[in-house]
Image 1 (tube, rainbow, N blue to C red):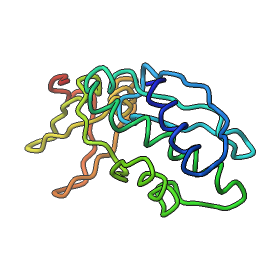
Image 2: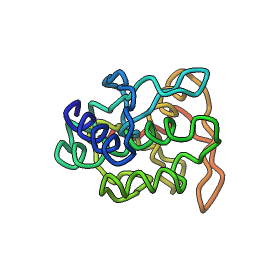
Image 3: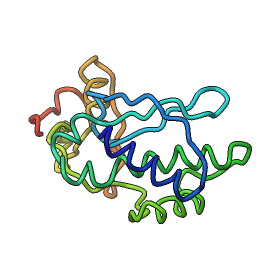
Image 4: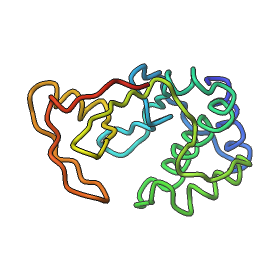
Length: 164
């Protein structure tokens, strides 16, 4: 990941003819849906690139090919347009992705076994809840769940089984 991040910074420097500050690279062991994240300080300046350990472990080749460039593109946009409000995946970001010769895709389609979900039943309907909703339910809170068929109130005793 670190080698790929550096590769994209070098490519941006050659294309834009300027040097860009390097960012701290960290790895999030609990990130299960977001593959990467650009962290900025209170002034809006990029300071850190964070990458998902579980998603990388489950999809190493796709992850390495797509995610570092995607996140570096966000940083480059921040450096190129420091005083402008830009949309996270707006035209400026898409342009940098073209410079990187990457598909400007907003979301990833990588699968991860690490993202846990839980099945609950309310009468005839079965619901898949994420880890946050599940934990809230396990602490005794009720969870309102809206589906296409009905608005359901799921209780702890409706628990069926855990899936991965």
